[in-house]
Length: 160
Image 1 (spheres, rainbow, N blue to C red):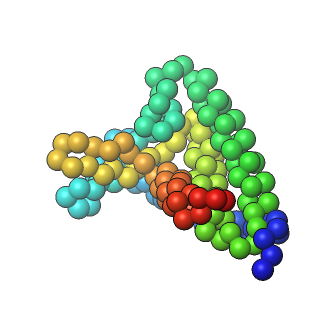
Image 2: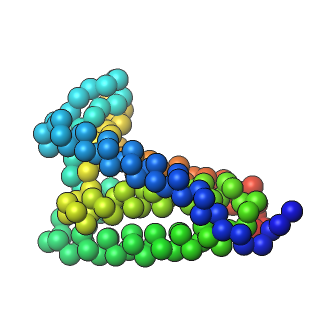
Image 3: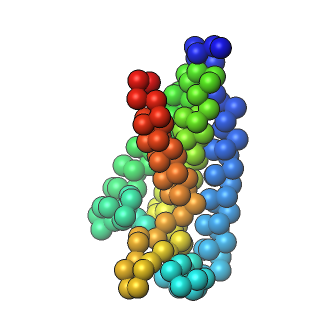
């Protein structure tokens, strides 16, 4: 079995799928809801349109606009690193390839919003009682799942 770099770029279809689903759902939410309008779906989940000017959990959202380009540049650099990493992966490292493809799709989905709109569209609102988790989107979900998969990979293969 070959363990040398062979390029795992064929997993980029997952990246493309994440980007398409992310942008489609954000467009649907933006077209059908007013800002902060909320639709109850089930007792702990709403669809609520929000605009995030900052990073994760609205970090630096209160700044005067410089953060838009700062986070956009970081996302572009991270995306390039992820593509190179994916290219260099051994053929037998499918789990990590999928996790990188998910993270890349999420990063591109959110950076597209940040560059084109100046903010990231969030609309998934999970809560318990009156405690709401920060609103998020499909891109954030893909990044989270990819990061969890990477964490699992570290525990499954500690010598990698």
